[in-house]
Length: 284
Image 1 (cartoon, rainbow, N blue to C red):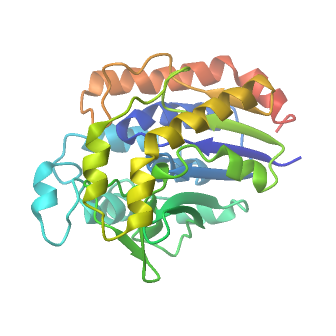
Image 2: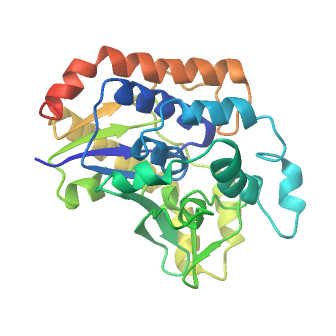
């Protein structure tokens, strides 16, 4: 039996997933396969490296640090992102809150990152490899339109994987996982409403018509995937951990009180369901 864990993105709302990760590590629940998208991948790799509390330390320490997140960063011609890319993907993991590359390499399943090929407008999946010390693959999966520049990998431009595969549970199943745990960052029943701003953003990428179409169809893509996820959950094909209510918590929310409460919700919910998860994963 092959087990997998899938991490949805959601910027700082992904701190819920960080709580889930720490509880899974405390209970020594560890899958054969991991995949994430956007911040779900950015923080999810710390599960593969078995670094308990690493993610919450980073978010609590740096969410209000302008080197990490600030509108000023986007004005830097060498950065062009709301995030300080070198700070987030180089300084933090290599100097401040160290990423354990050696332990990460011991996880034979690897960690797949979903991203969107800007030229084709289709999702692609690339493993994060430890030799990528500046974490370019993680930058690509997290590259939100407007908030990031396009990230090139081998000469191909990529942006956030959540645009075309918001929660890649189907990829996990297609890759042979028999049991899949999805760590979502929105409450049950959440669906996106039509957003005029997405259409306006899409127009900025008119040089890439396939990507523009993907942006214009994002709401429909997301909602259809949520419908499918609900069906799979009802059929017992997957299990889902999700917050109870994310109203009032923005993607880039810097309120540490709210963020810590969301982290604790993820941790406590996972601990309550740990026996169920152990049985689901066949005693792993």
